[in-house]
Picture 1 (cartoon, rainbow, N blue to C red):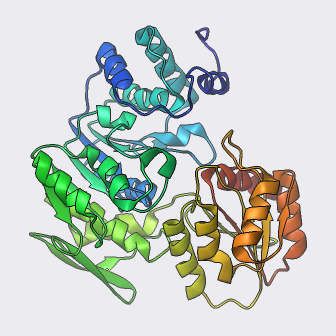
Picture 2: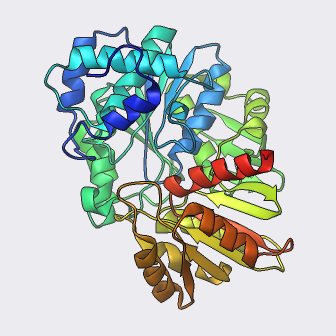
Length: 425
């Protein structure tokens, strides 16, 4: 057990070692410790699950919910630059002191329960929320749904953004199997939004089996773009002349539409007004989602780490008028579909640089470079460090070119930190 006053960095280093396995799906441990903590629960809890778009959806939902005057807590994972990003109250990151105090409280309550790193974080968010008087909590499901730690907390409503192939080693190797796991957040009589127009059969079947109120994109609500604005219709409400979310990419309209459907299903009709939405969406910010930075050359950073997300990134690249070359720095974890991601991006990338992500499950740079080269049918350099990857990319690119950073949260975050550091020096 860490001593009182142990800094957050030391806590995080220790928590990476306390569980026999980094990923150990199951909700019993969290349920047990959560009961021991005896926290005052939020009045309302939303779950946000799915393969892609969860972080963007949480950001949109939280921004709108704050307009209701409620104190809103959000829990997301993984983080981009700082662990504190995972736990926010009214958009502000929790402090080191708040998180450490939460860890100390969990440690005192857990007894002999061996929690994982993610489970500590989930419980810490709930402790911080209770201490801050959070009334509405938005909890992003980390992996799957049925056995994810977040699913130990009873929701009032939920959102499943979409289903595509990811975490196949843990969730299954086909869409229906993965959808069954994601559908595990459904509850009897509670609304659950499915945010894609392509609906797996297991989503529909699970909703029927548990008697959840399933609300489906394209059937129960829909949206359309109209130039610089967009329109949305729900079961009771129609909104026109909506401002496009500041988060880039056409797919963000689908995320935004699902968030509005969730608010309608939850009975929060006062938030479904054009003036409220248009005050929120143009001001949204989220690191690492098609984020652009001008630093010597244009940089584009996106956490796409599966083929569906890479396809959305490719659509954005395709829509741009660009005459220069694209140099891509890529890193991926060992449970990811390298070949699928590369295939989606290959026509838009002229030079590839592979580097190991900052994670124990990272694919080594030389192995990743070989797989990227085979998938892209093009040369791929293997960098021995992040500094080398950045320096090589800058040497290959001129001011008329661009550098793309993608493949993992555990690459985009460190590159962002390095860019900000170098720009200030």
